[in-house]
Figure 1 (cartoon, rainbow, N blue to C red):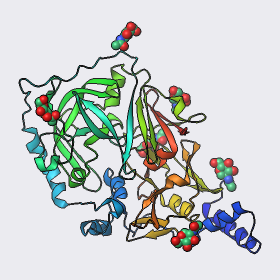
Figure 2 (figure 1 turned 135 degrees about the horizontal axis):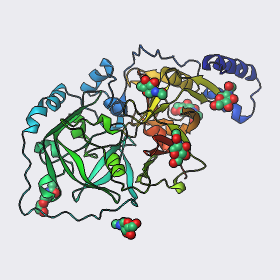
Figure 3 (figure 1 turned 90 degrees about the vertical axis):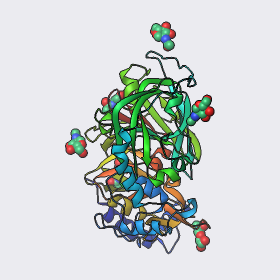
Figure 4 (figure 1 turned 180 degrees about the vertical axis):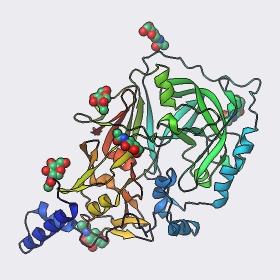
Length: 456
Ligand SMILES: *[C@@H]1O[C@H](CO)[C@@H](O)[C@H](O)[C@H]1NC(C)=O
Ligand SMILES: *[C@@H]1O[C@H](CO)[C@@H](O)[C@H](O)[C@H]1NC(C)=O
Ligand SMILES: *[C@@H]1O[C@H](CO)[C@@H](O)[C@H](O)[C@H]1NC(C)=O
Ligand SMILES: *[C@@H]1O[C@H](CO)[C@@H](O)[C@H](O)[C@H]1NC(C)=O
Ligand SMILES: *[C@@H]1O[C@H](CO)[C@@H](O)[C@H](O)[C@H]1NC(C)=O
Ligand SMILES: CC(=O)N[C@H]1CO[C@H](CO)[C@@H](O)[C@@H]1O
């Protein structure tokens, strides 16, 4: 039986304070400094602090977890945004995305005569693998990879937490296209309209996009899918317009979450599997801190990780790469997570977990506070963070302390924002913070997730 985290913490503090008069070895001394009994515990379902900074907005974007009102207010007043600039949320943008849905379907897409031919991409048969670089942008807020759609190369954000492939394109108002790389279906000889098909996706903070749908040939790092549904935005919310590093999302969760109507469409990965294109029905995410990593389709490259992978069974009921995650451990103390389910989500910057994990972890971090103004847990940037061990389907995976320091919240770099923050939901979201410590394989052959520490 596991002792509760709280009782272990109390025991630890008692023995540490007894040991204080004669400072023990350095290593233990460090633990004394890390213990932070003053960390004000969060109450799971009554979070008064706003969820903060631009990264946390990204994290909440996709889920039906509403952002605290205080945060929305401070964003509108331009108070939040840290060193990366203010994040704009506008009611008008939200309404526009939803309102344009009907109008979008009316727009006919014609192939321009004399359109430039896209490069012809060889169609392979069951032997294909492909790798694309995943480049972190904006202080690891997101990872961007090139996608070839009908011969046009578009930098996009790969998102294992949603299932729509939607793209900035020439149908958008020219102001919305500013600074973006846009897809032009009329320039692609392989594009075909799906008559009457529309999509509309909205995310937890009210951001979203909507538009019409066609198919085109998509090549990601050498893996080719013909007739991939391309969802072309005719309206996008301000947050996406402002984020000029990304020109759309490539959804890699299960196709059951795809929003295209009247006929739901398959994801790139699902199509690649169905057509027998991939050497193995897997893809992997190798995301690194402040350094380019890769997404790889069709193979698991053993040179990218150390040791053996541990495998977690995936529960596809919700359409996510969901697995059980029922316990955690910090500096030798264990805790339990009630209703412990989590998803592996490359489209979320942070790691969002239940209050038990946040309380347990930050109780071990010197100077950690729940900062209502910033809207999340912060700590002095020079604090040494402990590693977090987290249950992934019955095995423990390590998220390194270094990776749990997300970013400074002030220009001076004195106070830092935690990569681990609370979510008020049964479903925990393990985003890029976890991926920076763990190489992850998404196995569509047996619906499982493999985890192993990155090779260096
Ligand atoms: C479409 O093709 C024309 C002619 O090659 C080119 O000038 C234009 O930039 C292309 N548009 C896009 C969006 O790639
Ligand atoms: C899925 O397949 C991998 C190998 O491809 C295997 O190691 C793993 O045990 C399997 N996982 C489950 C949950 O069946
Ligand atoms: C799968 O997830 C659903 C929804 O979260 C849950 O109701 C169900 O019990 C889960 N199944 C298993 C086998 O864990
Ligand atoms: C904590 O859990 C790990 C396994 O995850 C176990 O090896 C260890 O003995 C546990 N520690 C305590 C104090 O219960
Ligand atoms: C961290 O910085 C603070 C203030 O800048 C300083 O007082 C403290 O000694 C530093 N701690 C470490 C471990 O460097
Ligand atoms: C393009 C391609 O990979 N073609 C291969 C299809 O499969 C046959 C038989 O396995 C190979 O000989 C081809 O090279």
